[in-house]
Length: 443
Image (tube, rainbow, N blue to C red):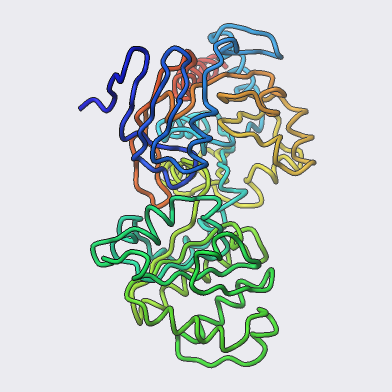
């Protein structure tokens, strides 16, 4: 059934569209599109972040589809030049993909394998420790639908969804009524654990302020209590949380019917990193001796979960993967992009739907600017402006169909609002992979 209707001449309403701004990937958008101006003029059901996302993605048809060293060229010329750069490199790196469809991500993995290259997603600078942690201890997982229908205990640890994922609480985890949560918010207890008060603290029933860098100690204290042990004053000194508060928190966690632990970069990008993620997953496992508990990372980009998922089922690893021996190897710190660039090892880079020059460490940025770089992006960015070959692409979800993965690993189909004159990432990657294969055969 067609999900779009013509409201009036040159106006289209697209129902059940998907917002790809954040990991919630809400798929109940109703978009009103001005076809003449090629922009979205209304986004019903979208949060404040989603409204801005849709409003900002108009199409600038004056931009060239492809450039080499700042000069407009044909798409074929740019693809040929990009292929030459990558084939002639001894240590090419591929990075980004978190704002691409899973179909494009799969093609990118194929390209990395063909080139014997290094491939990495933005997970390596956000939730990479999550993947490392759960690979070591396992993952008691769930879906957001299960949380909506069953969870009477919601814990936000080191994340601030009220600002970063506004609909996570209102649409999935706190406010909505569920099959076994008939009264919605009244049937739920919300706990916020963080180093400081945030807007999420305002919706919580309990706020636990932990000393910065002491999440692991607090998690271990909770594990001791859940497993029947007792705490001494050392834990209060280490965590900054009074013993009676820790004991009360453990009691609350054990006495719920269905609990969910959401965690963010406040846990994965602080002291402990993947050990923190492991400790959180082990806490959930311990709690399952008393009740039912699950864990989910609050993921950022619209399809960063898809990047991890696609690379995992293609290679066995979620990020930081190297193919230079003819098979995939995974070694965070060695094969993660920031580390490779900081050490000055890469001699070519392909950046897909990402802007590392705007947010990487200075040594990594300086090296990235020295090597030939290829950029895929719908908008001009510091990275695309510094690239030797720059492709202007259509925006996934707004202009292109495909698949993305919600933060709970559920694949969601995309319904584009309007067409773009620019090709999608996938439309460029397919002929690029073909040209790379041709050049390698000729070597």
